[in-house]
Structures are given as C-alpha cells and as structure tokens.
Length: 347
Image 1: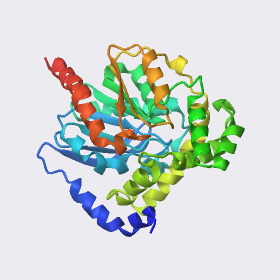
Image 2: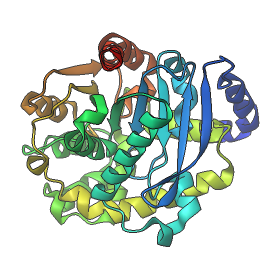
Image 3: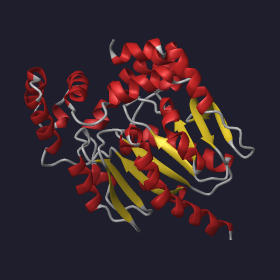
C-alpha cells in the first residue's frame, strides 16, 4: 500500500488524533481561525498559542500558494513559547476559495507585502504587542525580506528559512542537474538542460514540471511532498477534501500569477541593509533553495545582528521536517530578542 493511500485510509483517525493534540485549554491561550479583512478582501488567518502574551510569530508561506496552516500539529510544542500565526495569503488556500480568481485582484509580491504589513499591524493591535517575529519560508522568504526592509519597526527579527537568494554561479541548477543524472532521471536532466540557467527565460509550465521532478530526485532527507505536505494535508482537522482541492487550485493560480515576479526578482533592488536582526536558517541538504547560496546571501547582509544557522539532516521545509531543532534555535536565539524588545517598550 502506498504512503498516500495509507494516509487516506487513516484520514479520519489521524484527524481526530490531531484535533485532540491541537486543543488549547490554558486560560490565557488563544485558538482562533477565521477571515480577517486585509487589503480589501477576506483572508484566512489562524492564531494559536498557550499564552496570548507570548511573542507573535508570523509565517509567510511558500509555494507559491502552499498554505502552512496544515502544519499546525507539527508545531504544537512551539505554542508553549510563541503565538503562531498562519496566513492563507491572497490567492492561496481558504482565502482563494473565498475570493476566487476574480476576487483576488492583481497578485504580485508588492501586493503580498502590503497585505503582510497590514496583517502585522492588525496582529500587534489584537494581541497588544509592539512587534512580532517574521518568518519567511521558501517563496515566502522573498515577500519576507521585502516586508522586513519596508517596515523593520514592526518586527523583532526576520527569520528566513528555505531562503531564496541570488545565485550568480547557478549553484541550484548545477546541483539539481547532478541529482537528476545520479538518480537516472533522464526526463528531468533533459528539461533542465533545455531550460538553461537564466530564470528570466523560463515559462511557468516548465518550472512546474521541474519542481515536481525535483522533489522526486531528493534523497536522504524527508520528502517534502510524501513525508510532509500530503500527510499533513490529509490529517488536518481544519481542512476538508474540498479545502485540499482548493489548495491545489490556489497553488496553480499563484504560480502563474507570480511567475514573472519570481523569475525577475531583484535582490539588489531590495538591498542588503536591514534595520533589524536577521537569521537565515537552512536545511543542510537543501538544494531547492541551496544552502550554499543562502549562506552567501547571509554573508552579504548588513544588519544590527545576523546569523546563519544549519538544521541537520534536513532539506527544504526544514522547520517542518525537523521542528524540534528549529524550535530549539528559536528558543535560544530569537525568543530572548522578542521578550527583551517587549520589556523595553513597556518601560
């Protein structure tokens, strides 16, 4: 029986198990999911934590359009120290289901940045805090660095994970081509050779095919589709089968809408100076967003404090494949900054 079929058969049981796991009974706790009007449309936001006075941690999900609210059970232990916010962005998940293509408006990184900043301000007001912790993951790391650059006053720190980065030496292309050849994936190797190394010449269909083949080529670390996304999606007590269908529709819509923004993204235009602490946290075996390029990007950053952190035995989506390692990093490095920041503002 395939891994996917096992999770389908066990779906109801796993949903019930996760519903019990996710139950928050602490008097100061918060467990809210619903639509918030952001950027002129209704957007789905999930807020969870054992104490609403804890530092807020806002995830900017990747994909494009791949919502992270399905991963809440994996981050349950984090909710002891943080109030975790998952946001189904414009064009993604339940937000896409509510608004559809026409209601989503023009989807660009600039629009997502505006939405993200508005949501950040809303969260600070709702939870009566001055700042929050911003976590940008995968494609969300592009939105994340733009938000951090635009409004550093809103954030205790920026944490980039699965961080997209400049790749002038085409490290990602070389690593992936090598992986395709090593695994005997002739179709993937031929596609990559035809696409070439210049992202500005790629079309969205080839990128989608490359991404699907790429996941299969990764060896030695948890597979982000079969080990993370599909099991989490199928076992989420907050998501129906229709929600899952809408997730995939939103991913297709978002990938097409953001394609030009992604392949022409200009890191130099954003700049490398940030007025807040910056952490780049990468799986040691990630070549979807290569560890080497993320480390080089961190080296170029000028910030009051910066640090590059490796998550061991992890590929892409390191915070979900190795949540306890990532949590330990947050506790040791980021939590003290946030607590000290709120105490300073309270004086």
